[in-house]
Structures are given as structure tokens and as C-alpha cells.
Image 1: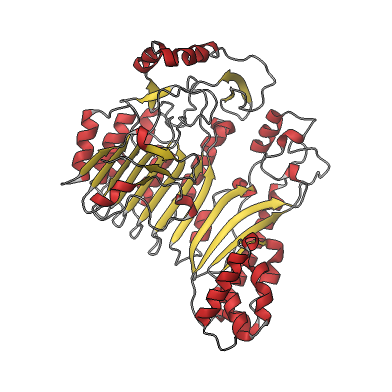
Image 2: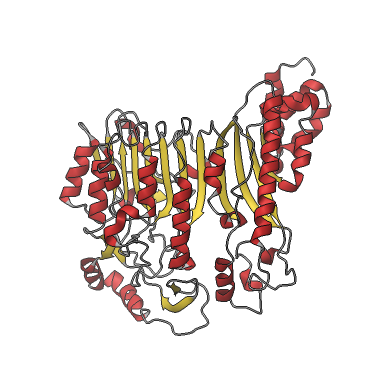
Length: 557
């Protein structure tokens, strides 16, 4: 077997992994015994075991460094992805029952996190300088947690286990506990071989201030792709949200680079399950130019080689967002080929993109098949008065104003399904004009991220869908990625798209709503000559029951 070609070794190892599906996610456990057969087998095995090193704890960084000592530095060119788990110190009051009493020491968190990042960068810099062949690396800050009992570190998953404090008290304590950071005066090694950097925001990394972004960017000069996950939660209260958004805005306005071609910003935002309440106003209606995402979009327009910009999650924006591009002096996004924006139903200036469809509700009441459902909804419209409701369950919704302290409780009421021309119309019109300003654009996607037609949020109206997807594709550009990363597994698939790939396409998915004529005309102009315009009907969609499950369109055009 020593004389076998490396390709045959690889085929044998692939068969071994297939025969051990339980260890398919941990090939080291399956393949390690075969590494001792001979040096050639060891080399073949290490091509698998060192290709990705996941869940490396910061307490194990010294052991990680030892793997590459001496002639084992050859392993560095095999390594393509490294994901890190940060271990943070336990709270001073370890006897505390929950976050109300076990208050984290943010100074200690910051020092521990910074020390681990410095050590990690020093190790990677040493490997980079000792390695004979340059091999680009994807670096992921995957999670952060404490070694204390789960009730103190899993971001609220176990909050109800505390018998002493209510969930509302724990949530308030968590929101007010502050954040830790990468200390600003940190001296980091320069890493030339990091091509992709991601901070996931999982668990306690959600409590990391985004000020790490400009610091890291200045030490990763050849970075090609940046992935950032953040949170903009209604339950934080308006004051905390404003502070977080301003800090994220400042952090994302780092100097343009000559290598960064892809940015993915994924912002978690909980849907408002009662749409009859006042929206938290984050900016004045006339001050939209100073809104967070307006400033960020205007700044990123300066990046000379940026090809892909994905703004995902549920971004709370102003309707005039794309006016930043239509008014831009010079050429905005000179290299941009793909732009994706997922937006929330409410606006940053305190309005809504949708309103109640009175005609649809009236028709539903006269439909014998829907009348019973409509009566049930009306009977449940009374607001609850029980002060003990601490979570958005059983059809009840907590209300928050400036602080993370719940002000009252109301019932679920999600009824906005008709686009509002004063807000949605502005967004559509300015976006159509912005598309004409991008000289290299090949794909533009505008999605309403918040939808309720799958009955995932309790009370909803099944006879009035709320869908909005707008896809503009240039000739030759496929609708869905050919090789999708996990993040994009949920891309909707349209089988018939392949028939028309050699011409421009414009896809509308709008449920029962027909876009205004001026909006259709503006987008037909933006889509270019010989455009294939398709309105996708809801009855032909299937699947898509989660963000990672693809929906499939089976209808003919």
C-alpha cells in the first residue's frame, strides 16, 4: 500500500469517511489511526485532518502551536479554515442565581479576549513566516462562553431556570450589563495570509463591541471577505439600540482597501408581533441622511474593488436609503457586481413599509370559508392585562420604549400586508434609479425579510400573504448561486430561469399585491433592453420552511 498513488490514498480515505457517518463531522477521530501506517499515509490523512480545525479553544492555543513545530510547519499549507472558541472569565459572584446577581466583569472580559487575540495573531504570524509556501486562511471567531454553569452563559437560553427573578428582570440585567471589547491600544501582528474573516456573534460574542472591526482590518491587509453578525433587537429599548447602531456605523466606516471584494453584514432583528403599536423612532424623518445604514452605504460606495455586498437579516432602514447612491458624486461602487438587501417591515424613522389592506379584510368577512377565522381574530383583539407575562409567548407581546424595561403587554396582531406608497414606493423608486448608477452590477436582490405566511408567529391572517422579493439579473447571471455556502442554502430556486439566462430578467414576488404602474415602469427601465419580466405566483412555491431550507418555484413563465 506504500506504493499507492496519493490519489488512491484520497479515494480510500473518502470511503472510510462514508462508512463512518457518525464521525463525518470529526474526520480526525475516524482517520487518525491510519496516520501511523507510514509517512505517506500520514501525509494523506493530514490533508483531511488539517484542512479545517474547528472549535479551537483559546485555552488550547499553545497546543495548536505545537502541532506546527519543526518540520511539521508543512501542515500550515494544508490548513484552510480555523475557527476559535473564546473562553471568558466567570463573573465575580459565582454564587449568583442568574445574570441579575452574577454580573459579568467587562474589564476582565476585555482583557481576556484581547490577550487571546494577541496570542492567536502572534502564532499565526510565526507560522506565516516559517511556512515555505503561502496558503491563504479563513479565520472565524465562532463562539465565546464561560466555564461556569450554563444558566450564566448561554445568552438567555436558560433564563427560566432561575426561581428568584422573573424573566423580565433577567433580560433587563443582561441588556444593561454592557459589552466587552478588543482593547483599542492592542498591538497585533500583521497577517498577510488571512483571506476571509468572520465574527459570528454566537453566544457571548453577541456582547462584543464592533470596535474590533477597524482594528482587525488594519492588521489584515490582504483580506478578501469580511463577515460580521450583529444584533438590533426591539427588546433592547430605543436608547440602547441608538447607541449600538452608532457604534456599528463608526466601526464599519474603516478606510477602503485594495483587496476587500466581499462584505456580508447579517443583523438579527426580532419581528414586531403586534403591528398596531408605535415603532421605536431611531431618526427624524427629515434626517434620513444621518441614519446608520445610509451612512454605511454611502461610505462603502467608495471601496474600489468591492464586488459583493450582502446586507442580511432584517435591516431597519429609511425609505430614502438608495438616495445616497442616486445623489452620489462620482461613480459609486465602481466594481460592485452583486447587492443584496433584506429589510424589516418598520422604518428607522418610525413608520411602516406596509399598511392594513381594508379591502382584503372586508372580502374575507364575506367568504364563508374564512368568516370563522376572521371572527376568532376579532375576539382575540383584547389586550391582556396580566402583569406576569415576561416573554412573547401564547399570543402576547411585550412592549418596550426607551429602556429594556417592559412597559406593557398586548396581544399578537400582525395585519400589515399592503405596501404603503409613501414609504415602500420611495424605496422602490430610488432603488431602481440606484441600479443604473452601478457600472458593473449583475445581480440586485431586494427582500422583505419579515413575513408571516408560515404561521410561525402565532396569530396571523392566512388569506393575505405578505411576500416581497425583487430580483434583477443581468444576462448570463444565474438566479441562485451554483455553489452555495451554508448561509445561502435558503436561496429560492426557479427551475425555468435557466431557459432565459441569456437575457436580462426581472422577478417580482409580491403575493396578491400588484406593484404600482410607476414602480413597474421604473424597474423595467432599470432592467435594461430585452428584459424578461416575471411575476411569480404563490401557488407554485413549495418548501422554504426555514431560512436554510430552499423554496422551489415549479411554475412555467
